[in-house]
Every structure is written in C-alpha cells, then in structure tokens.
View (cartoon, helix red, strand yellow):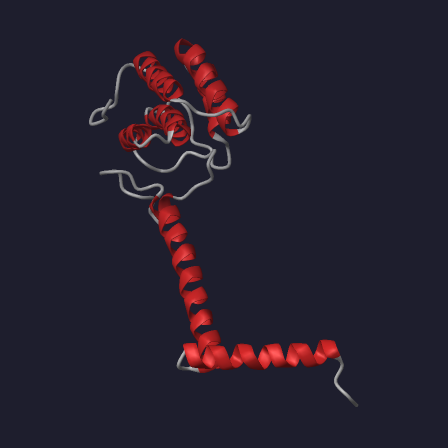
Length: 191
C-alpha cells in the first residue's frame, strides 16, 4: 500500500511537530502532555476549590457564627435559635448586602419571639409563613405587621423578587412592631 499525498503530508507534518516539540521541550511530547494535564488539573481544582470555599463562607458574616449542623433547617422553617441571635444574623446579612437572607432572618426572629413567649406554638413542619399566619390570629395587635412581613418574605422567596436594602429595613421595623404588640422584647434580646 502506498502513501497518498494527504496521509504522507500528515505523517511528515506530525513527525516535524514531534521533533520541534522535542527540541523545544526537554521531556518531549509525552512530557508536554503530562505537564498540560497537571496544569489543567491544578486549575480545575483551584477554581472548583475557591468556589467551594466561597459557598461555605457565604453564611459567615462578621461575628455571626455560621450555621451549626443542628441549626440547619429549610429556608422557610424557623431554627431553634433565640430571637436575638436571629436578629443579629439579620443585621449581619443586611450589612453584608445579602438582603434576601436578612428578610428571612427578620421574619424568623419575629416568629421565634412569639414562640418563646408562648403566644403561638412551634409546629415542626410548618413554614415560617404558616407560623406568621397563626401569629396573626393569636395576636391581633400584630396581625397587620405579621401579614405584611409574610407578604414581603413570600414575594422575595417564592415570587423571586429581588431583595433590596429597603426590604431589610422594613422587616426590621415590622419585627419591632410585632415585639411591641407582644409586650416588648424578651429579656436579653437585642434590637
């Protein structure tokens, strides 16, 4: 079988390329391929590793501790944390510019405050908006504030509206209204 012009040209081109690489790179073609593979692996690990570190650090703002495993709950649930800690987290999220999480934490703080005061019962499995609805019934003086807070939360979390700083501030005001309707802050809680 004789070589055609295309296959012969390719063979000569390939041989010349390999010879040039061997002259240019001391380890030859296999060494160059191995070096490129190592560099690609390091780049992939670095880019994947730094995004992983960013994700882990997302919920760790200033002096607010990151979630403990025991504290992890669904976004629409109320964690077993004191209301003052939820308020501190809301402020930290707002200061960091994460107004979506700040809105959630303000509503959680209001609901947790009412649970701790035994105005409403904590019912595992209920969403924070369901608990806010129960709070409206159990504490009519806070009904307007709780309904408004649940609406803001639902618009952002379920309606996918973009959370703004004004939403965080409004939720903080609503939390203060709910606390006032419930008889003021619990001892040891922070505004």
